[in-house]
Image (cartoon, rainbow, N blue to C red; front, side, top):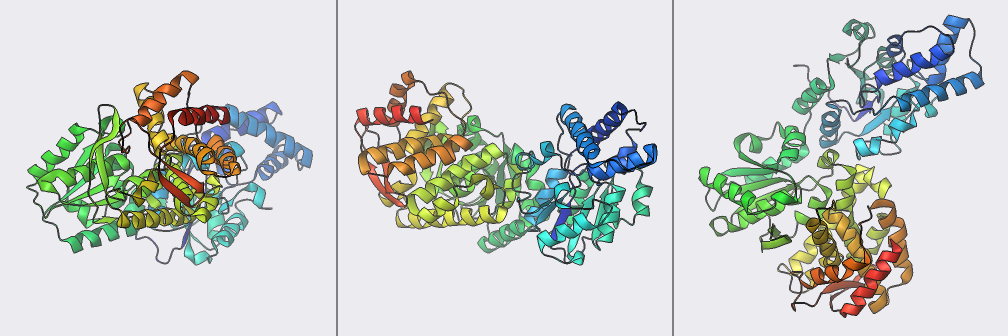
Length: 572
């Protein structure tokens, strides 16, 4: 579609049912069945026409038409509760294909999103943060509970404009229902219709939709072509300044599918050769490195060539290691697409691969020419991946910035707000870069970054050995509790900090690993073989005197580590 994106748009006001979720068929069947139970004749299809109205308004409309009277307040409450029950029982409501790419295009462009739905269906609203992490902060949502008059009245969208603090001419509205389009136009906004249901295009034309798409995928394609991508622009500028002989992009299959399309207008990506490796720790190995080396050879890369790593820690570690070793070192750029990658793997210059079941056993120090940090790519990752990276942010606060640590205690609030999250990410990177600049090869100060990792790597290695699901950040989250306990035992850390971390962060947010009493000797043995140990067989820890005040090169006795692990098991 050749229609340009309207100029001056400062926020997107987005409907939920039929736009974010393929849920309207479930709603229509639930409404029809509920009315049928009351002896009221309806058709499932007609409820597509009422989409956007509040539940009470829909019930009143049917009562007036079929019974010649208004529904009482008690009838509205009871009948809507029954409809909601039938909706929940109708099965899982899947995200609408293309909706994730739509949101990602807005996020990459820096355009805030406001949810504006006529629904009060908690089962869907509760899923938003899992299905679309960070897309809609809690204070950027308008639901049926927030308005007196639902669509087609403009009130919901006028409320959305208030949330975004913008004028009507500065907003774009995305709708899939004629009544929603009518509400958007009445609010004075540029209104997009997406015909994801059975309602014919002509109905949207009658309501004055400014532009009409046949699917969310078609709409997402249009956005990715027309919206700016500041990350892609920055990447192009950095690459241009470096003036490399050749450019090779390294990514993985998931990022190639979910994120790379947002870089459609990048000059760098259009001219580079691309290497796509399978995702997952199993592929953080020599085979993936060889694949990159071969691609560099095929591209006739020289020492003036450049690797651009776009992905999570797997990609930045493997791509960085390939750069460190090809022709004794070429330049590379990291564009992390996971929270863990952004605040940990992508910065600091540590590169590597797993070997013989041990994480990052083979590697090199090789600093990237640039790391491009943004919360925008995080819209493609699951909540589990987000909390994995969040553990590294918590770690950074604990070792270097007590105020940062306190600001991160409300995990759900930070993860649901891209501005808060990106601010915290950049502070973490700032701290890490400062530490690395003072100690690039981990001879002293840089060891503070290992807090939580000695025990965490042991948990992770045990999980790998037993083929159990435990992400790196999840392992570090549990490792931090062990090392907070050691900090209390050996360095006088206030016990309240141990309990606060255990009760406010670890237990509510992170999955509990199955650690048995008989696992303790094996965990201690794994710690004893950690690559950070200066003396073989003697686990080396960074511990805390208090939040923000670390102490490196702490060497507890094995019996003290055993006691800490016993206490850890009691606390979780």
